[in-house]
Every structure is written in C-alpha cells, then in structure tokens.
Amino acid sequence: MIELDNVERSYPLAGGRSWVLRNINLSIRPGEFVSIMGPSGSGKTSLLNVLGLMDGDFGGEYRLDGHAVHALNGKQRQALQRDALGFIFQHYHLIDDLTVAENLDLPLSYRDIRTAERKALVADMLDRFAIVGKKDLYPRQLSGGQQQLVAVARAVITRPKVLLADEPTGALHASQGAMIMDLLGELHRDGATIVQVTHNPENAARGQRTVHLRDGWLSAAE
Image 1 (tube, rainbow, N blue to C red):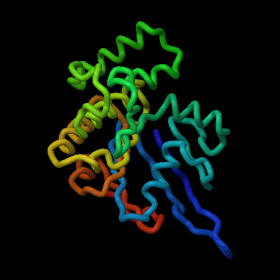
Image 2 (spheres, one colour):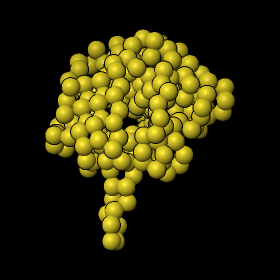
Image 3 (cartoon, rainbow, N blue to C red):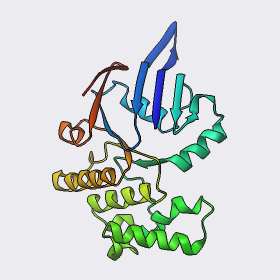
C-alpha cells in the first residue's frame, strides 16, 4: 500500500541545509497497522506530511496504492489525497458552525455522490459510532472524546485506503483515549490500513509494528 524509497526532506539554511528526513525506506502492506514513534523534533510530523501528500517537496520515491506520488503534479496529488487518505488529528479539526451530521457529510460533498446516498452514508456512520443522538449538536456541545469520535467517523466515511492518525488521543483523558484506540483496533480488524504517530508506548503497541525515528533517520522496526 505504501512504499518509501530513500525519501529525504530538507530546508535551506544560510550556508547549508537542515535535514528533517534522511534516507527513509519503509513498506506498509494493505491492512497493516503501523505506529511511528520518536522524540520531539525527530521528523515524525515531516514524515506524516509526506505520507499524507501535504508536502510534495521531498527527494526519493513514494508509491501509494500503486501511484508514483513523486511523479505527480499538485492537482494529481490533491485528487489522490482525497480519494485514498483519511486523517485523524489530535485537535479534531471539526467545523464549529456545522452540526455533527453536517461535519460527516462534508468530505462526501467533494465527491460525485448523490444526495440520497450521502444521507445514507452519514446515517450509517452515526449508527456505527453510536452518535445518532448527537447528530444535530455542534462541536462545542460535545466532550473532547465525543468530538474525536466524530472526527474518526468523518475520516472513514469515504472508505479511504489509508487512515493517518496524528496523536489521535493526545488531547483526551485516559478513558477517552482508550475508547479511541479501541475504535482504531476495530477499524483495523475490519481491514483498514492505519499509520499512527504517537508518543505513547501503550498506543504504539496497539499496532502490529512500530518504527522509530530519531534525528530524521529510521532507526529500528519491531
């Protein structure tokens, strides 16, 4: 599903360059759950930005679901991102002036999907994530755990090939975080390919494999 060959990322500095990713080689199979760990400044966010097609200014080769990302232009990368990827962020990124149901419908609105089918997909997500009773509420009326639940539902409503999670429990207390990790485990058992960035060893252990970054280098795999 994901293949990185000698991927590097750097930024220009006076008299040289600052390297944030160095010679990254990583393969992730369809249906695999991989955790990325490393201290602050290790390159985790930079790697996630490359994986998520948010940063195309990298060296090396990146293939996603058979597509040569390194050879695509900006418009092509944007289309692939929309069609293949789902994102879960630490701080939810819900739209404040949209209801729960409207937040779920938002990613569907960018696709050629009939209104009736969109309504059915939203209803299915509300039911699956047990948030039917919250559908007409706004994010500010929800707890942090409930907001993240909606964010996960929004990320998977388009059935993405890969789910990218950036510290998905970082803003939650322990019981809410455990609920979200249980949900990611359920999605994985249903066949989702998941890549999560986390500082939490317990969360990392929920995956099948952990890769470690330090100073931009991929150091070890478990």
